[in-house]
Image (cartoon, rainbow, N blue to C red):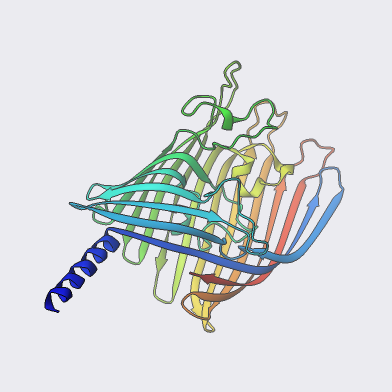
Length: 381
């Protein structure tokens, strides 16, 4: 009997060792909300178009997602970890994006030297992945639905990322993508950077660096992003200026409230990277600056978030007859009430306005106004 007990203990101990060696977690967020959005566009020719939409939407407060993550202890202070995460629409069950793991697919080796990661991840200014910039200096962590305005990056394929250990109060993050997007666009004209050879001038590449500081109640970030746009499809050279964004900001927790402040300078940024100009009517390349001021505090049994955004920029098209100024301002407010540690109710509202100067004296300014209201439920597992 005693020998059988020892054998059982040995088996349980071995199984426990395997469990500790490879720890895998299934996690996710399911977010459903009712969203009302009104968009009013005043065109340069004086015509006005207004669109109202209301419906059940997924990811109104937090993007609905599911994922797998795990780590294995290799000994001697070394660990290997992975993260596979995909977005989905909770209102209809469809997968998000055009790939199985569109949010992140990464493999990481970490130890006393820091952490080295490879795969598909978010840039330091994307409000995804390490989230160095927006997670530190934006009260809404990347805007509130349609309210943002600022220049922002995205997730990148073929990324190599190195994150240093924490030195005193500072930690650095460095990234390089050999090819930002591997998904081919069959309809692209004259060519699609996604079809170019990885690491070559025929495809978009990306590099970044961020320095985060933890000074107790004060968190800071200084970051730089470089967008090496495709300039050669194999036969033709293109006059393409590479994009750049510089960020400086942080947040301060005074006990009863947390205040966020961020400033950015951007140059030669495509309109799809500038939230104020994402609408096709503002297509072009821009330079300028943006600022954000926000706060978070607890009141009436829940958590409140307020934030304001301002952007001042201009077009830098090489063939443009006249430089055109763009301005944006937006404000957002959100209230979240926790029903449990995993489930919360939320509601919010916001307003944003983008103005692009007229190209000629005969035209009028192009103006887009966006108003939003929402209410919903978030559950984390």
